[in-house]
Image (cartoon, rainbow, N blue to C red):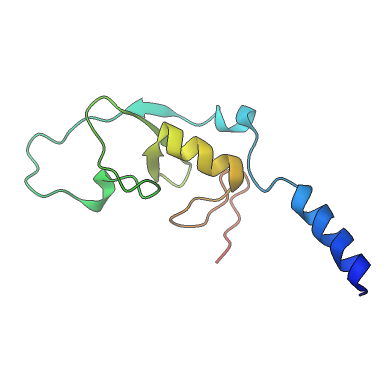
Length: 99
């Protein structure tokens, strides 16, 4: 490919969205975080892997079909850019794995 063809290809690929639409993201279930009262150990599941912050009681969480959970804001931003789960790489609407 010539330099001009590569530039054109880069512009074409760069303009296509790899994420999900807000309409699709809004179809995912949202719930409120509830603390585990009798748990002495904090598990990794009690931390959003996108922002690395611990969940606080009452915070809204979004659950992907693969059952991984994130803060609503973090998950929404992530899915707007990338349509796959950041943990298992399963596409949210499509089921294909990138592994």
